[in-house]
Length: 291
Image (cartoon, rainbow, N blue to C red):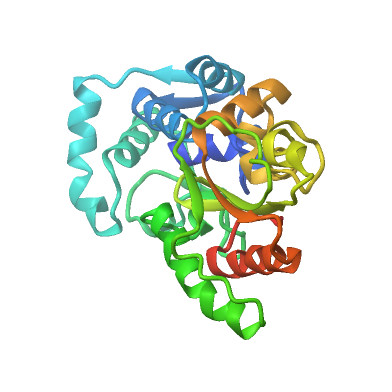
């Protein structure tokens, strides 16, 4: 494939296995990128919880020719401001476009808004309007994960009463473990409903009976089953930049980057109450993965 200049969205599509990443793969070894866009890409990977060494390897795997952002490029990017402002393009976007214009190469992006730009540079968009959005664009954002849980538990009282199993959980035994967190054992005489929260969205809601300590403590971090959090991440192509980590590193990522809530119920209560609460939280919090 011919040479081209990649923007940050194109690089992330390749690294994270997002839609259009296979197109970017065709440019690997022949692509250029502004140092500004490499910095944007690396910053997003930091947000996703990757360590700096992992980010270096991901960027090196693209075999990019990384071009420093000098004074002339800075002024050329500023000069594009009026032509691109109406489309909301950032400094990084303009850094990519001006480098492409200077080298006489196409600019490759996942941003569909670029297709409407009135610029001399050829723009190649790697996703069409029918392509599903990547994970980070379609997640349901949560401002306060703790309030998500608190309000849900308050409302659950009415649901449980309608089911004939009254449970006022407004003052329930709830543990909020902020990232980085360390999972503890399931307390004696308790069953639990729990959830994992990351980057503005709920990843998984699950439950553990009184005798399910292994599931409560370790299986979501190290398991391969699709029902575990680790297994769900491994099977999610849109999380490839994380799912490519080996077992120990993925477990460490989950502990380091996700927050966890544990809602502890007396094991003497009807186990159907635990299942009802889990189902209610699935409907209420819209976790990315099934329990």
